[in-house]
Length: 521
Image 1 (cartoon, rainbow, N blue to C red):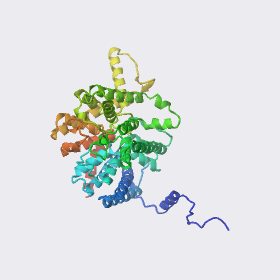
Image 2: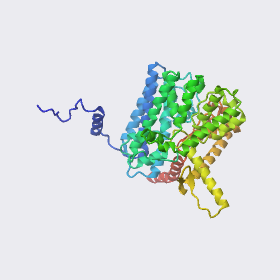
Image 3: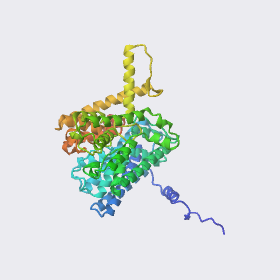
Image 4: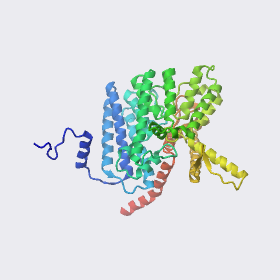
């Protein structure tokens, strides 16, 4: 008798995923149209739904009060997101303008969906507060308006950390990794969301590049979770802090952040984790593939480590926070690492340090770590590029006929158009920082608080100075100021241009769309 089976009968030996794919193909839903923004936003909302379901599982394990709400929201978000994904298709070809709109729409939709758990569970009564917590999470800023963090249910605490973990590497990177139909537009999507001025491929296929970046990200998360547990944390705390360390987000299930543990081992584990998260994940992958030379020769890496060490040493010497003990050195290095990597963890009352130490932390607040990391800020490579460009222009003032390239480190040359874009980005960041500070001040905050709030929001850091020196508690900021900070968080995370270009397109097209509607009526 033949070993073949009748057509349509599923062999138990066949992989489950292959069977699921065939079933999906057989019952494929009709497409309602082509829309890259809706297609990607739908899958992004589905990812949010899966994250809420993870939180629902945690809440179920401890029999918390938010079990039903989290399960309902998780299932609803997943189903709605998958339907939006299945009912639309990607246009061919994908235009650059569509990419900018897509990234902005996806992140905005994700922020709204992420705010629902806070509202439905009654954690916040204010829509603005729920949106603020969601935006702060997904942008890995780490600022909060939660009054009593320890009183929050385990499921919601897990959700806060999950938002930062999803936002750390970027939901668009995840979407490209699982979306086989994105095609040539995939690299544009990655570059539009990528944290830094580089958009390097690891492989010729952009989908494989996205998968490998997420592979490194997940691997580092697992390592950090194990390290935290070994250092003395509970499994729940270890998982939460691994999510918010690797994403450089800074949320913690405890009001005192990592200071709650008062543990030397935990703090040094966090320092190592933050330093790693502030590095370039592409270089890590190449090093794991037995090609460590790009990592070892990276000028940006050396400068990044030098900045962390220099800021830490400066704070240790001038902070006035200790007696020169090892505890004082640990506090200084911890805050330096937390600030430079834009993580935002705190272990000490840095607001009580000397003005010189606080000024140093405020100065590096908007800079950030390396391009290709999960950190916020303008990135070390941009600061280095702008400094090299300024040096070249100063030399040309002395020698008008001088022909000299903008150099980066050992033999690296920055193309003129890239140098121009870097300087333009820095100037645009400065304008947004100043404008945001003025608007926050107009809402009633003091000068130091307003400027640090603007810097910490745009740099995706979290804690600030003035009234914000207690772990980034934005309840002291007027609701209007929080709205301003939310906009700055998104601008900082998406690196300004995608959001501005998307809003410009909507603004320019709105009158034409309104006119067409009037004509049809």
